[in-house]
Image (tube, rainbow, N blue to C red; front, top):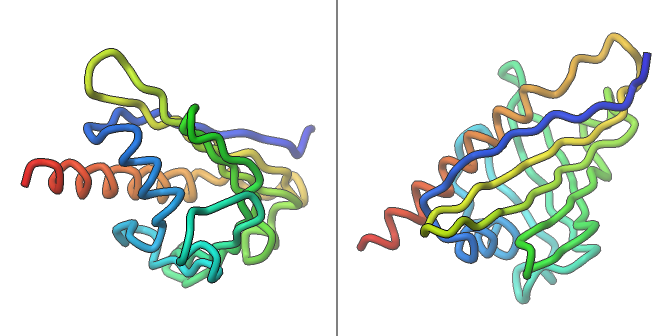
Length: 155
């Protein structure tokens, strides 16, 4: 049995792709707190645009327990509205040898867009569950960011 896995979700958003990408990649400290409980970025991220190698730390809850994930930006493509983060520290690495968050925002002919998220991982052993808890947390926050941006655009 392979310990490599991938789970993914596609979510249609009302906010524009540029605004959504900017919030999630360049201003993650403005992401509304739903399942994730805040983010801290390295100093470079606070004073300028995020770049490959930038580090951010996310607090999240799993089964009622507070946990932390520290992630490094591995790839960015602002034209394609895509980003990849690699987990470099935190409790996710207790169960997974490797863990990546891949985000791409796909624009459509109408004003809407679709956020496609892929979680790629390698489990430490066969008994480790697929990370659907994290996929749900990411989904909830995508919806929160979309609602915040859509509300702001209407005021």
